Length: 76
Picture (cartoon, one colour):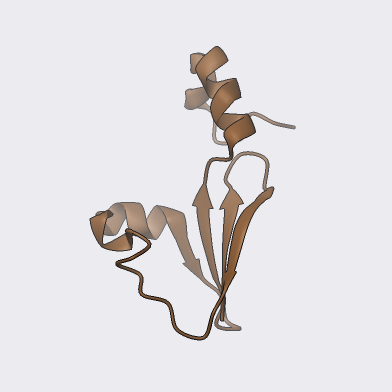
């Protein structure tokens, strides 16, 4: 099983955890509301998991251009 953290704006890979067993509380998933979990975490049919977050580059861009928060994807 692999957990891949992907930027929700640029689709770049932030990190990958490739372990057979992962304690999701150590990853902080228990701190997310059910709605946040639904929006951020995708369980793939092959057993892998994709977590959508924001990479450092996109976070920096959002700080410089706060109006981009209104967009789902600001990088074309």
